[in-house]
Image (cartoon, rainbow, N blue to C red; front, side, top):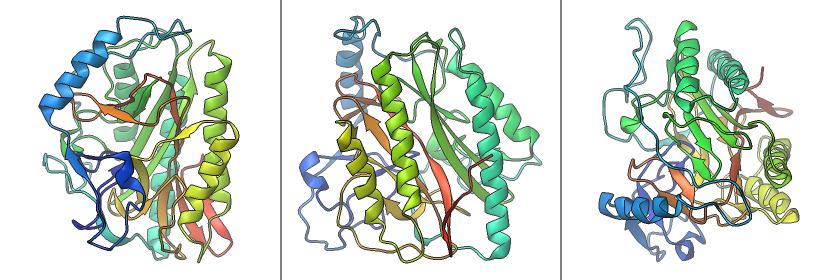
Length: 350
């Protein structure tokens, strides 16, 4: 989620597009184009993040109330993996500058649509494969290595790798991690839930998808969170079509989450995707009155993140990992869709 312009508050994308956090009170109308809107902006400094880590990880030593689960702690991150030179790279690779969001929607001709279908299909197959690796005792770094190999074996580039300095080829977000978890040496444990976020860059087009998987014997409340999050995404996709207002997505997701008393994360949003990783429009997953309508031939992601408890996030000192402030579980599902004459086509589907 990246900024539409410097006059608007900046959100985080499904993949971190900026490093500014907004107070909850400032999020009433996140993309209003009125420069006079009184938003408060706080840049997350490394000092703040280190302090947050210190306080947060001190609590990691204790089990969460009424749960055997311990708070998530950072593991060891292995070196960046190699990509063969013949594989086409996105323009941002090898630059630590965050590209942000590209102005204007991703609308495609027939060739572009076929390229989007190809990248989406590959991303879906990679995600499906990644899900088979979710077992107790498996390190998230092992998942990253396997995903990386499958992507390059298919002649594609793993879009997260090198995006603003991100060190891995996939995001693995375990338990209370909302998104952007960096694969590391931590072993998955029985009862964990894990979101795996896959984006591939194939023939100049990005396909972006994610799902939350269950590891072993998962508690009923966690299973329900995962189920409702998947349902919220599917319900949102079902209302999409040419001329539909984007804000109906957030209203649909929020309404479904409310039925089960789950929270909807506001700091991270969906986005246009195609020839660039992040483009207009910014897709809000909560109730909003933002203007704008879907266009025929347009592609974008919908990727709701729901929580059992707090929807506020803490960013670790790696400047990527976002976790719930109270350690409560978070789940996410994501698809890239194409707006068609008949509604919406899910591109990231096997």
